[in-house]
Image (cartoon, rainbow, N blue to C red):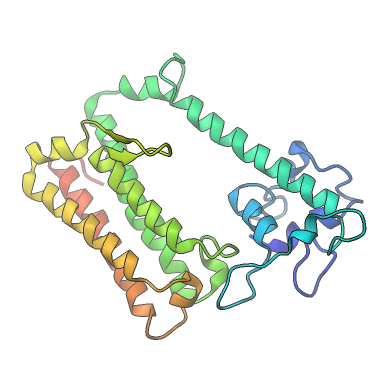
Length: 273
């Protein structure tokens, strides 16, 4: 995202929607949603990373995340920067918009709603449902996580291309993406409340259909975890330090192989991509 589209940046203390009361006199959900990607895909005004930037500010340090002072939100003459009230309002509205979007996703998986995607999914024929599940796992492993979320930043050696470039939390993003893949395949996860949840999953079915390919996938996911954990943190240094870059590429290659391994398992069901 172009940070200057939202708020001030180094060298431009008046940039962004927050500091433009003329073109954006009111900061509300309609304003921010309308502004999102208006004029270009980098003009991001809503979502997780817009919130991340407002909280942390630009990351201008090799050793830390962004260091936006809390005084950027303090009114009454003792605050820093300008438009502190608008900045607070922007953060609140942006959070509300994100919560609303997440609620829509949650509701789509509500089995008590006849028109929800949950009910559409469970009523699909088995082959179609399996194809969707395997496609999600292979795409997130390969094109998304290995490609867009790691290799792009590695190839360009540019922190602007990393996933969470303001909070320096990219290493956790990567690990949790990989964990999500593992959870979906094995049907096991720990909820936000700390309790373990488990159920019948692709792992169990694949162990019957093709036990060798299933074991290969399970081993590969563990290898990917191990290689991700070996990457230097913060990630914006891992992609530029000569001694650390090979570890990033090792993780990328493992995730690409993971995609191939999922395709091998899916072929056992007669599903090809």
